[in-house]
Length: 267
Image 1 (cartoon, rainbow, N blue to C red):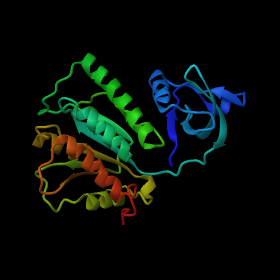
Image 2 (image 1 turned 180 degrees about the vertical axis):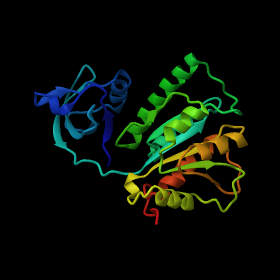
Image 3 (image 1 turned 90 degrees about the vertical axis):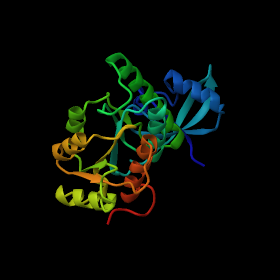
């Protein structure tokens, strides 16, 4: 059975001088710990502010704060490819859903993208508030799914800002409904790996671009593909997917091809 996982923002466990010490959880995480009803003797997984991994034993609970001792320090995590999801802004709680489920899959980072055809238009204040919300959702999903890190949610980006963030990626895959059916994800990944001389899949950094409800404009597709070093349009098949569906399916397919969701692995 997997252990409950907590991420610490401001505590480095290797710097603790006492054998038994409190976990300095963020308020939301402390509330989550109370809901879990942790008991003495139970073990939890902890990723501290230095991104080191520990298994800790609950010694007692003081005023809902877990008091723990380090049971063991986990081995360094094996490196793995990174998948960044550039998601066109979607209305309602669709972005919440994409961030939550894509985090559970193992997406490393999110770039919310302001697109021409997006229904949602956010001013600076609303964009900052939404980003904070999405970051909280990502942390909660990472804790629930046992991810080794919390994905970073970038500020809402313009097209040019997004291109700057992903221009050096091993491959930038633009999911486009007008791409030919032969524009397969695995072929694009392989071509990107060859072009950048990336011999190890674990070193790959792949960006996946998904449009909003209205899709990406032709101009946006061209601008992305031409503005990055290794850009490709790819098809997700003959079905027309909702943006919140594509935002989960596309990175899942990429992670599968990279060997992160099973034994497939790129050639």
